[in-house]
Every structure is written in C-alpha cells, then in structure tokens.
Length: 358
Ligand code: NAD
Image (cartoon, rainbow, N blue to C red; front, side, top):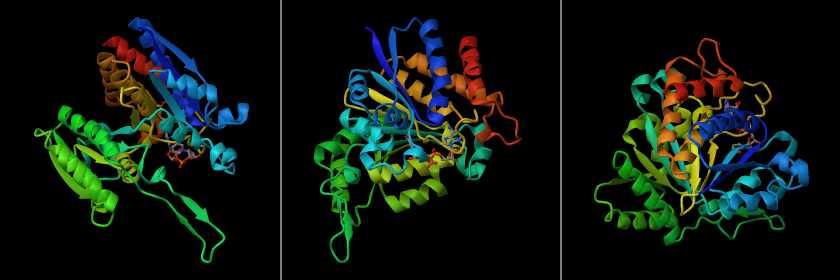
C-alpha cells in the first residue's frame, strides 16, 4: 500500500538538513522500489510568512493522513516577538498535540571515533548508548489551569503538572517494550520526594513492572538522574520520564555525545505513526553557511523507516552508512578537530555511495 510521507523543512538550517535527507530518501525509493508519496509544505516561520499561521490547516490535515512526517526545525529572531499562537515553535506543539504523538524517543548514541567531541572523558563516555523515552503531550507543558495574573499584588503565574493513569501507562508500555528489545534495564525518573504527581507516576510504573519480569526497573529522582548522566552515563539503558524532566534529561544526554547535530528523535502515536526530527533547532547562527550537520535529520529518516514505515533493513543500511561515514573520517564543521570538514550539501552523496556500496 502506498505510504504517505510529509516533509516539513521549516526554517533556518531545518531547510538545509532536509535537502540531503530527501536526496537519500529519493535514492532509497528508487533503489528499493518503495511505494511512497512525498509532499513538502511550509511550517513555522516560513508558513507564517506565507499565510499568517505557523501551522496552517492544510498542513495539519496533511499531517493527520501521513504515515510519517519529517520535520526540520522552526524558529528565528524574525518571529520572536509574535504572540505564542503565531510563533513558529507553536507548530511543533500543535502537531504533537493534534496527532497525539505522546511518546518521544531520543537515542543518545556515541560513535567512539567522536569521543573527543564529548565534554566527558573517554573512559566515562565510550560506548554510550541510551534511549530516553519522554512523555510528550501531557504534564506541566499542557496542564490546566495555567496563567499569568497581573492585576494582583504581588502578580503571579502558575502551571499545573498533571498525569492520569492512562497517560502514564501508555508511555511506560513503550519504555518497557523498548527496554525488552535492548539491554533490559529501565530507569524511571521523577520527583517523588516532593510532587504528588511523581509519587503517582512511580506507583503506576512500579505496578506495571510486574508484567515485565525480564526488565529491571529502577527509579531515580530527576536531580540525581541529571547528575548521574554526567558522572556515569553508561549505567543507563532506557530512561522514561515526564514531559518536563524528559526535556531536560534528553538535552543533557544529547550533549554528552558531542554535537546536537548528531541526535535524531521520533515522536509516536499509539499506532506507530510518527513525526521525526533532529533534536536541534533552526540554528540561526549558522543558517545559510552550508555548515550544519545533517546527520541528526538523516538518522531521523532512519527512525521513520524503522518505526512508521516498516523498513527495518533499509533503516539499518542508513545507520551502517552513517557509522562508516564517521569511521572513514568524514566530519562536518561541528565535529571536526582539525578544521577540515565537509559541507552540509556534500553529505548526501557520501552516504548514498556508502549505502550503494554495501
Ligand atoms: P539550536 O539547536 O538551534 O542551536 C544551538 C547551538 O547548536 C547553536 O550554536 C547551533 O549553531 C548549534 N547547532 C544546532 N544544530 C546544529 C547542527 N545540525 N549542526 C551544527 N551545529 C548545530 O538552539 P537555539 O539556538 O536555542 O534556538 C534557535 C532557534 O531554534 C530558536 O528560534 C528556537 O526557538 C528554535 N528551536 C526550534 C526547535 C525545533 O524546531 N524543534 C528546537 C529548539 C529550538
């Protein structure tokens, strides 16, 4: 059956990293005779400039009927003073919410050849391979009531951190199953020492662990987990956490690998349809210079093939080609150590050659 892929390059380097990714996808479609229809639309600031909304209805409708969405990055100074509804970043939250993409999977994987790009010592960081499973559509980012009260003395602002049992169970299921497919270790991160919502989170996950006797479940408080990620990251296999804590921990884990330009992510719904995007933003400081690292976006394509498009073998071919690319010494500017680097626009051909060579 024909599969639909929606391509949303967005703003800044979002556009630049999407180009090589689509070249690779087009090559794969032809080589493996894949029955895909690809449509490309504006989102974020580019969509706002085009039609006054960062996430126009036709984009949302197309996203809802697509099997996989490849999302570049959105945002930039030009749109920073718009109200929240009109800001480019609102496109992301709307897509996550409207498509019910509740599970955010962020691998933090280190190529040992790049360990000198990590801020941690080699002996601590080598062989890093963690998967962070972050709840994405609930918790404090979406909880009601929320607000800013400016007619009181003192003025105040508030948000609500709330999770119901079903929200916790569905993210925990993905985390337990991911641990089963990896090294069988799951660490749930919360603040059960101070937050009722965390105590509840912990009790629901502990209860569920009886259904997964092959997974070793541990719990850590978020502040300790942040510290442990830096002190001894290899103690972790899969980490599951709420929206807020997962946001922070996945950025720390990502930083350990040396460059944000290497980190892909998947955001999935119940039926494994999903949106795939690099963890980085639109990087206005380097946009337009052809120096962005497109590996995060290309790895995100690999995740799309694996989770939403049921092409595990082709996904592995991309992963192997990326690993070989690194082993052969190809470096983009963010990960070079000797100032020799290849441009964003040169990466696709190298990866395609490596896939073709296999
Ligand atoms: P950023 O991720 O865009 O950039 C942070 C730093 O990392 C910058 O120095 C940048 O040059 C570098 N960097 C990022 N991606 C890189 C890549 N692929 N290759 C090489 N270097 C890379 O974060 P920021 O600067 O905080 O935000 C810039 C804009 O992006 C803001 O408007 C922000 O709101 C937006 N943003 C969007 C998303 C998203 O679309 N998912 C995520 C984060 C930030």
